[in-house]
Length: 218
Image (cartoon, one colour):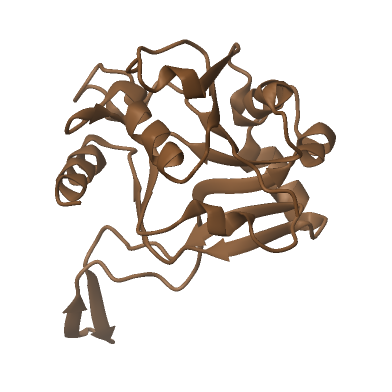
């Protein structure tokens, strides 16, 4: 199998769920001494990706030391599927890594996703509910479980794909999550990789503060 050193980093969206707590664009949120975009670029570089295509609707300032590894794909609001389709024109190899800027994984080597036979692959994890669970027998409270892990899988926002999958199934306008992934699943060409590590997604200001706290301990 051809090994890739290329990644597409989805860096669009306005981060509306973080407002009014902050007006800073999500990619520019500070995670200790790096912003979120710089953190994800450096994470990819640490795992031997050396061509990183940032799919966004605008350019952001990043540290000059990261610049030589980055190529920008700037487009209008076409959804995540359309953004990947445009960015894929910059790929040089036949397979690539794909990820959202706001999905952070810890304790896991993303190059493991590239192993094995696949056309498209999605990284999945069992989520932890944001509430304590009350265990009942009729109207009697038996006990409590604080934020238990649920017994089903969700997408972690990290993928690997062959370039021809993008050429064949990705729309000019539309979202990866709504149009592409269900179609690949229906055609039985989407495989799952179970995350053996920790997943942090930044959707709210509380998520952001928790991410800062966790990453400060790394």
